Image 1 (spheres, one colour):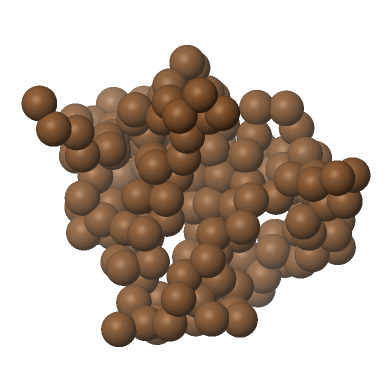
Image 2 (tube, rainbow, N blue to C red):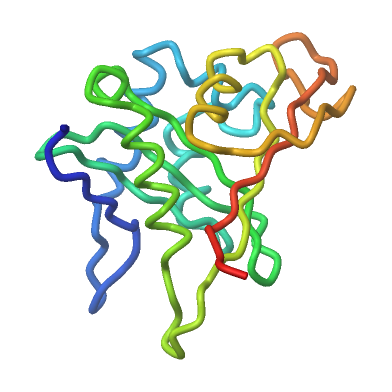
Length: 179
């Protein structure tokens, strides 16, 4: 059993951001140091801490910082929100992989899917993912966290480093609903 998992949204509350710009930029450089940035941002759209910060602050992007105890173990973000569906992205840091990554990932998903608006309605019915097929670790992790694999798109993602489109795995995660 891992310690308590906390999922803190990056937002302003009473005019004060939950994380400083430096902290958000630091998460990007933590990805760089771990060798994960080129994989997480293989499309080349984010290539610096400043671009990451702009994405985190942009309307339509929703960043969450994941803690186990007092340690940041992952970041997750949503974008491409359409009514009650959103595209899900994440990066688990090395210490997260060591602390029960499937339990962490599953709790993040359940927390996001359990969020409700002021009327008590769920914000999301489904999260979607588009993962480069070449990122086999991520594809295995999706399956372990109960994502459903729909199939593959032959040219579903852009590989900035190779300057070409590559196959992608299409997946979704839904909140468990009773009939």
